[in-house]
Image (tube, rainbow, N blue to C red; front, top):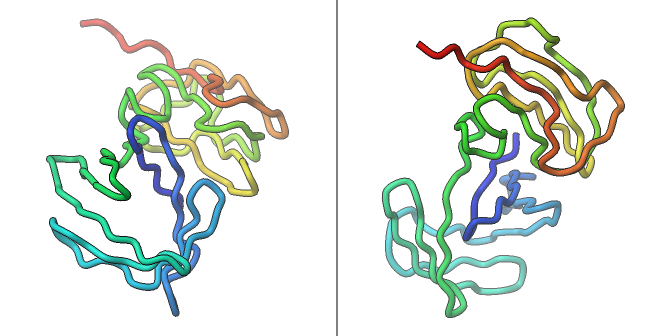
Length: 165
């Protein structure tokens, strides 16, 4: 299952291709071998990525990481796919995180969903991803069916608006 990281405002998809004999990460579709993963914790670190020695500094700042590498500073944070402002869309919409095609539809209009429950499975760059409901609610509409294509940030499902108390 891919992990989404936000690096200076841009979302990147990261998956672990393998752990042995060396860690191999797939970042935005490109493989990177990490021969010497750094120890956990703040401070100056060293790791080997491919044939390169990479020195960097890391500091934890709440739910974010500040990384200084190659003379530049980056802010890194995990993207919570279930948060209303996350990649999944707003509280009432389910948006495509990248262009692709619908592989299967798990829910239909009128179905009740729980936050995080799979609604639609998509495929992008030969990777299948289940898109979760952004909150508890009722599906208002599924805008794309099996085999249909979509663009990045296109709304592919909606939830009925939350009732105002």
